[in-house]
Structure formats: C-alpha cells, structure tokens
Length: 202
Figure 1 (spheres, rainbow, N blue to C red):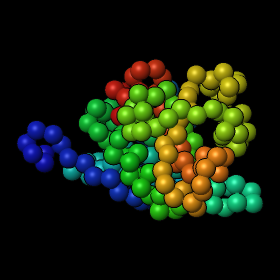
Figure 2: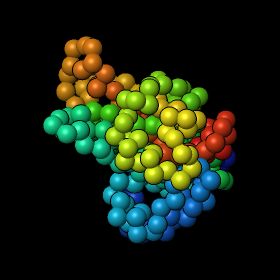
Figure 3: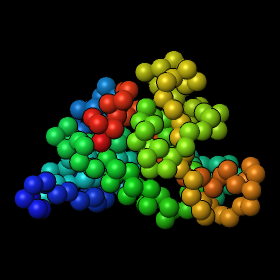
C-alpha cells in the first residue's frame, strides 16, 4: 500500500514475460473485447503498456495499432486497442492512466490521428474527446470492422467514434480539411457495453 489505504500501481512498457497475464486480462473481458491469441499478444508486445501493482501483478493493459495513409506518412493513423483492467482494480484510475500514457507514447511518434469506437462516451468526453463521423475512419471500417464478429454493419453498430484534437499532429496545417488531420483520435477497441464502461472497465 502506498499510503495505507489504496494499492499503488505504475504504468510501464510490456515485456515478453507479461504476455500470459495480458492474454488472461483480455480473455476476462471477452464480452467486450476482441480476444487475441497468446501468440498475437507476443507479436505485438512492444505496442502494449501495462499497469503493474506493487506486488508485481499486471492489472491492466492497452495496445495500439497503426494505419498507413498512402502517399502521406505524416497522416498515419493510430488506434488504442485491448484496453482492459482487472475487475478488482476498476474505478481506481488505472484505465485513465493507461490511456493517457499511450497517448503520450503516440505523440512521440507524431501520428496524425487515431480511431476510437467506444460506448464510453462520458469517459472520453471527460478527457477532451469529441465525437466524429464514422465515414472519417474508412480504413478502420474496411480493415477491421467489416470482419467484426459482434456486429454485421459498422454504421449501425452502436459504438461511437470519438476524437481528441491536439497541436502538431504530423505537421502544422492552417485550417479547413487539412486542420482536421491534426486530431489525435484515440480508439478503444470493443471496450464494454453501455454505461458500465467507465465504472466497470476502467
């Protein structure tokens, strides 16, 4: 215990030895997340951050994916994926800390935007995110959502797309359509259904 009342946790890059714990966390949230195989977690372990409790247990995780923009690498998109927190650690700020740390990590990559499809609109609005039209994330829809086993049509799927605007995403642009590319759109892939997202998942 850090102060005698609440257990402390820290956010750090995942290591190969964390793969089974991350895999187990994702499977524990299979009703809300797209389940990954253990090998899939290992192949992408360098893109995961984990929340580690004082006793060394992995109690949360988040990954990211990158989408290229043909002809303009400065408009590369990113998406937060597999955001999950151990049930005993929810409502303690673990999810928020993971998301904020991954945002900082992606800022350093100078990505142009990231996609979020989520039910957690209140959670992300509290972090400054704004809803966007799904037509703005067609790469995601064609490469991911079209194969989703949970919904047959991404446009009727109840998940909402949200965006966080930042300065200096990729390169400076003055206004109009170019300025829209300066968003950092953070995505949480299949988090939790309904209002329980903020309370139960994070």
